[in-house]
Image 1 (cartoon, rainbow, N blue to C red):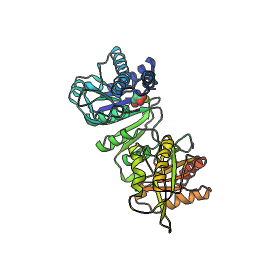
Image 2: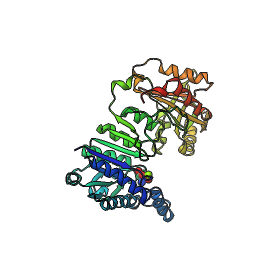
Image 3: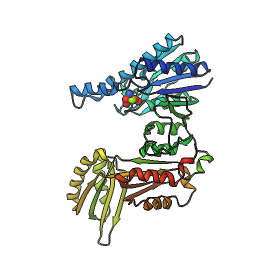
Image 4: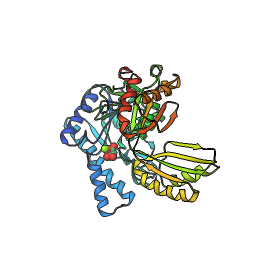
Length: 407
Ligand code: ASP
Ligand code: MG
């Protein structure tokens, strides 16, 4: 019998009526002759509500206790879904993370899955029971409840699918699948039928919001076939899978845009060994993730450095950089959040020549200035002024013919 793991998010289980709707979908798949494990999130808004309660007591509440608190959101929905399925005449049983157990490390609020035991769940499945698993939570080696970070139920679903060696993992969400670009920016955006793990990982880290990075990483590492599809219709969705020769035909598969970054320029630092490490070590120590970095050296032995950080960290990063500027005797420090990072992604880039120059020409033809460039084997990113972001996305989507590709 095929084993399918399905995941439903907070909106899909937002009230009893919606839970009944999920139960009907699950029951239909069970009736088709599948073994089913369902992973659910807390009811929409519940995790935020619980976090707010803790913050009313203390601005930085004890992190172990926060995980005990927020994990209750999912405990409610697994039980409600099991009760619903039982009342429809199906055998159903709920599991909290610790009951599986879904083993994690001890980083409360951002725990990583280390192992998923399969014996108990498989025994239930084999006697015809629908197993319902609380997303977002696990247990560490000391028996503490942990949570996997916001949006963590996607990761739970993929981890459970990997642990049980499921035939596929279906993530039900409020969009139809993965698109060639954000459909809110251009109506020409197309749903992608199949995308390689590597491409999806780039897309997730470059600003596409369909799937969380950690869930994609997990799927890629364990080669779990994942389908992203809508919980509101029966459309096919997008399959996340191994790369295949079909995928290489197009040079570019998707265009993404991230408006949530900022850039910092530190000019006139000495061009000598150790300078870059003196700049980036304090930023790393403050947990600030630096993305693109560009360094130019000039004839007078000085260098200018420009790099990007998350917009939310700009103030903190500038504070640290002011210190660095004084210490290194740099001539100038400027921060700017009027930027957008527009990227093209595609496995086909490895075998198609001239993709970068096509991108730069297309942007130039629209009068868009490129401030920074970074590349990997399967992506090219350009930092441009924020006001041109949507124009750039539409232009690149047209230039690389994404309207008619792979759908
Ligand atoms: N309930 C958790 C959250 O809101 C996990 C999830 O929804 O995936 O972040
Ligand atoms: Mg959620």
